[in-house]
Length: 49
Image (cartoon, rainbow, N blue to C red):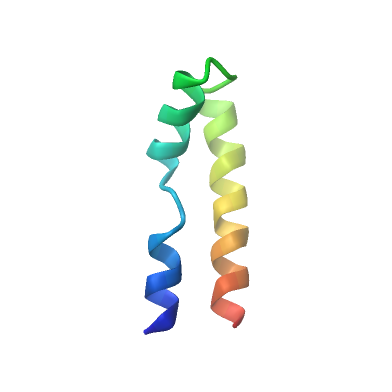
């Protein structure tokens, strides 16, 4: 049950892309793929606990 609460705090890929566009930072497919990879790593680390 604690794991699902932890996942709620992780932004979605869409939220990350929107944030990057609003900040006028690099965004798009390549950045989304990198962010997606990092988010998956974070989820795996949370799942280990």
